Amino acid sequence: MGTYSYPTFPYRAPTDLMAGAPQRKPLVIIGAGPVGLAAAIDARLQGLDVLLFDEEDSVSFGSRAVCYAKRALEILDRLGVGDTVVDKGVSWNVGRTFLREEEVYRFNLVPDAGHKRPGMINLQQYHLEEALVHRATELGADLRWKYKVAGVTPLDDGARVSVETPDGHFEIDADWLIVADGARSNVRRQLGLDIDGHVFKDRFLIADVVMKADFPAERWFWFDPPFHPNQSVLLHKQSDNVWRIDFQLGWDADPEEEKKPEKIIPRVQAMLGDDREFELEWASIYTFQCRRMKNFRHGRLLFVGDAAHQVSPFGARGANSGFQDTDDLLWKLALVMKGQAPDALLDTYDADRTYAADENIRNSTRSTDFITPKSAVSKLFRNAALELARSQPFARKLVNSGRLSMPAFLVQSALNTADVDAFEGQMVPGAPMDDAPVRVAGRDAWLLDQLGNRFVLLAFVDDPGQLEPSLRAQATALAAGPVPVETVLVTPHGGSAVGFSVLQDRDGLFAQRYDARPGTTYLVRPDQHVAARWRRADLAAVCAALARATAQQTQPATAPKAEMVAA
Image 1 (cartoon, one colour):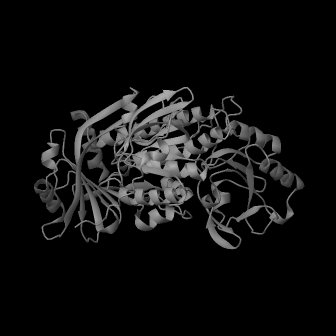
Image 2 (cartoon, helix red, strand yellow):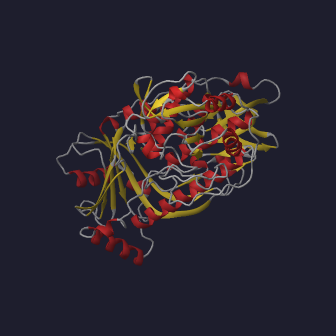
Image 3 (tube, helix red, strand yellow):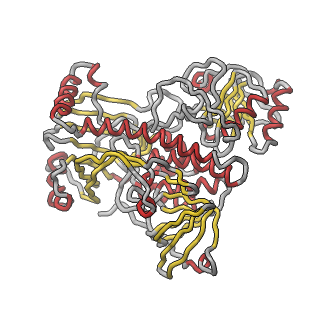
């Protein structure tokens, strides 16, 4: 019984691309997985023409990546598919870890109220890709199915792409090339580009089973359960009554044998009990690795997602970090392509996202080392921590079944303007913005939905009807600049101001999370990261921060000291 009908996307003959000498396109993307499609959507939102090639003509087969974190959902909101994905997915915040049959650790991803999105949703990758394809098509992205990229030749001013189709071979030149062709990237391999790291010697079985079960929508992880002794098991609920089960098998397991239904079904029966009816929908065997390219930018070739970096699945950092790659990249690329920022701005994509990838790899490696210890000593420590966690709260912090994806705090980015005023809280320059409930024109809304895709100056004011003339003059000047900045007012009391969008801080959570009082001002990047903040900003300070945030000003920023993690 299949729960999903795979679409077939229409093939178009390349006659429009084959005439004469190689045509030239401003932006080409290789790969129609979630990250490549997100890049195509973002490009269209930035007003860029985009041509995307994929060698298949449908979405990916099997559930594959299933966990999407709150920050990824906020990015998907900005791309226009958040509601579709969340409505179809299974929301969850609670994760539970068991030693044999006893719970030893529990976490809640969103302990605070006042966030639009949950900590996580589970959704099969094919559903997500289909939603992204529809959105990209709606926005006018040129998606070409059954177009296999056979080779890429870097050029001083772009790249030449060699393409094979059912109707023949052709070449096309791109001013800029985004490479999103996955962990086994043909482009990366053909160009001989490095990718370094660690491959873990263990194997896991993914089994998607269809069943009706009353288990809660939580993440359950077992160490040494009675139904699968001496190994680990992970359970996630997905949409359409599909449950994802991951069984640790060990390095010596035969992948071909373990994929056979006669091997999988007894494992699932032992877990669920003989009386539980279920049907096996999809299965796969995977090994995992934590590694990345040394550089994500190679001239006019920009690598994103699994093509640039890979992590183990524990912690759901793969697709989530891929979305953050495109979130960081596309606004920068758009400014460069439009002549509004220097080429050096794209070097900060490489610097910021390799920084985030290193944080991901460290966290993912720690999780994987705990789940699959490399030595007898490591296993002894792991087992001791699990045993102690039953009764000792301090030991529960040592239990690591996958520290889940958190957004990248780019506190070391050269684009940040260092604080000159004192602030409390985590909304430091480089931080992804926290959401908060607001009211817009008398209607309930969310802060992050009012931002994105352009630079915004958020000014916290007591009474929007009594604005200082200097603020109005500043807003006019910023809106007319070479990189326009829109000024948006946030107020605790509501009201209106001619020529401004006004957000009422409905529950006071904006003021709390941003340590805001009248006069507090935040400069926000198009990807909803904080660029700068002041207790009272003048036009010169804002212009200097904008210049730094667009790489017009190249002096290194002084990063604030903060305990942050990246995902």
